[in-house]
Image (cartoon, rainbow, N blue to C red; front, side, top):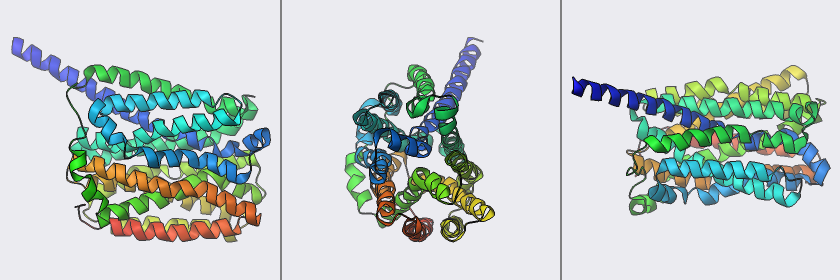
Length: 403
């Protein structure tokens, strides 16, 4: 009788921990994009207020990506010492501090706050797929779907409400940015309680040093890294400059902000179903090829089309791509590795090199616009990048493991 009571209590404890863990994963996912995607629609206001050129605004958008590239190789080492739970909590604290710093209306604090935001998000980027593979090894595809869809949902919301918060509620761009400290605070509370239930002796990342050099010599790892990098290039460029591109077609900046939100909403079904489909098949070549075709047509539509229906059709295709490619890249981290340790190494390598490529995007596209004063050359560049994305996504989809 006593044994049954103990077993029941243990089962209840495990169920509560699992529920709390899923909530914690979703809340971390909620915080990995809004602090960045909320910037894009506000770029014009920020430029007018503090006098940023297009390339400087692009640098502001690129700064978190540079931080991702620098921090990603360091995160597994921190997690080895602190455990994933403590490291994720540390990342959330950095994120919240950065969001609060950006409230100070000075260029210096805007960039310093964005630096802290980048550190916090980098930790979550690296560790979230590792936590999912470790805690839910048989449900990796489903859990990746859940948290990647959560990321897309909150990212689209952040893009859509930024301008209304700034103008409609008279919060200004600083107030519209600091609002995203609320979900960060909630996530901090959840992970604080998770620490009480987690195994203090459990370290998710092991023997990173012994095999990390092999990962960096793996052709497959580099294929995934290049895919991750250039799909992120497309995402962050789109978040930064799509409102301005649409504005150049005669659409008001507030409507353009909502259309950016709409673009990301169109990617939500892909965010959910792509990881599930990827996990069901040994090869993802066909899936990667289809996803890779959409942005070529989408950015081509923005380049050649001027009518409202063509623009809407174009951003729908772009949205499907942005929604599907990121979770596909995350799925490759789990599907192309044999264990959690290898997944951590691949995640760090892929996100470090990948985001280094992505960091060039917003600033480079902004520079091209500053030089040409039209969006023709930037959009042609995005079409070329889309071809690269399709090529390396397809190559990464073959049924094999990193060595």
